[in-house]
Length: 246
Ligand code: 13P
Image (cartoon, rainbow, N blue to C red; front, side, top):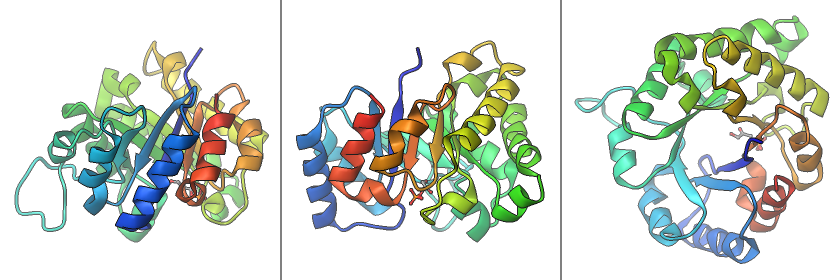
């Protein structure tokens, strides 16, 4: 049985005060019978790491550079994230693919850099509404996944995958459990061809996961938890989603 994982992607939200309240609320609501992690904006990472020291909740970053060091203004390397105790790093989020023109290959290179520093990359894939309506969902997610499979080789089993349909992110429109399951199954089949460990890999769903739809989504056979945006900013909602994963 795969263990469920719930990750809060805070995106560019929070403040020192709000973060402290959120983490305190989460601590009070736990522990949860699932793996839980939060990914704050980078500037808060060390403070969040300090406050989660010795607790069950893990932490991670929302992005990392594909490079190790050098003249890359504004970038942060996987090695630096590892120094601050990160367990995870999200790579290839659709907001970065769209707003920062990240290519499939760059995302794969970021995942490789993360693994080289013993971080678990949470690799996001997902189609836009136009791609879904054009019947391109399978082709798009397989293409995005395939770049990562080719770059990581047998190490592919060490990543976490997140299927996030772009049209469901922050829109309140969730993929139905059946729609999500269909893509998760497709991804697992693709991973199966690349590693004997595909059945052990966690594939998360993201896109308007809320306390009232989490349990049904998480009960699908190939959905192993969630990558949560908006609802991860409220302790009560995030805790309810973590409970739904147990
Ligand atoms: P929402 O949960 O706000 O739709 O965001 C999903 C997401 O993008 C998580 O990475």
